[in-house]
Amino acid sequence: MAKVCAEPPSADRPTARLRCRDPDDQKFIDLAVAIGARWLFSKDLALLALARPARAHGVRVMTPAQWQRQAATTRGDG
Image 1 (cartoon, rainbow, N blue to C red):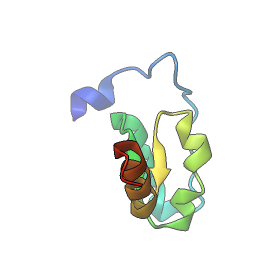
Image 2: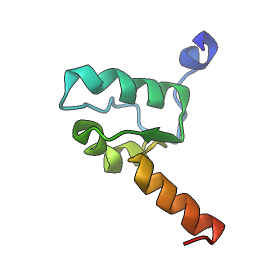
Image 3: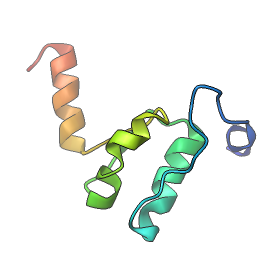
């Protein structure tokens, strides 16, 4: 993990830090961005409020139910 965190930010992603309105949840969005996570699943409203700005960082923030619906649609189940 140290190697991933030590890599310079990608040129196509913004370098400004996303700010969560709940300081206790900041670590989750920071980690997702730092490791290049594609998704961050949460039911926390403070994290879900970052869904739109997080997309610019390559992270899709959504509830588990939203992801499940999206996956079903992608598979053709829904």
